Length: 77
Image 1: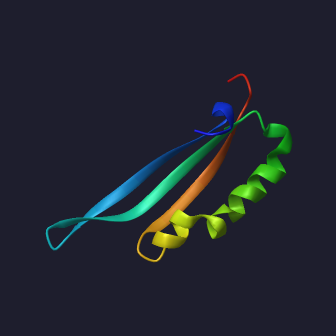
Image 2: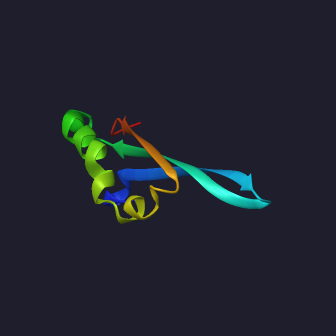
Image 3: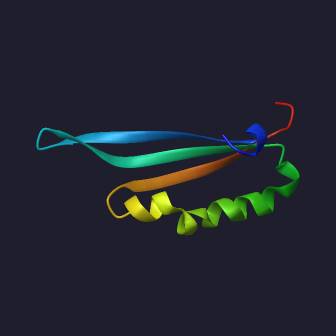
């Protein structure tokens, strides 16, 4: 959670068994941004480019497929 609770992220990992060992293969992240609908183009543009500057993504993307979506939530939802 960040920005006073306005930005939250929920991640789901998908695990497979390889040689009797659990291996993380995919991670999907849903970002929810509250109260930014008037700035949707800027929020979407930031989401579209964040991975190239994310240290975690840059560390794991060759071994684990990482995807994400951005959901804009109304301020009073």
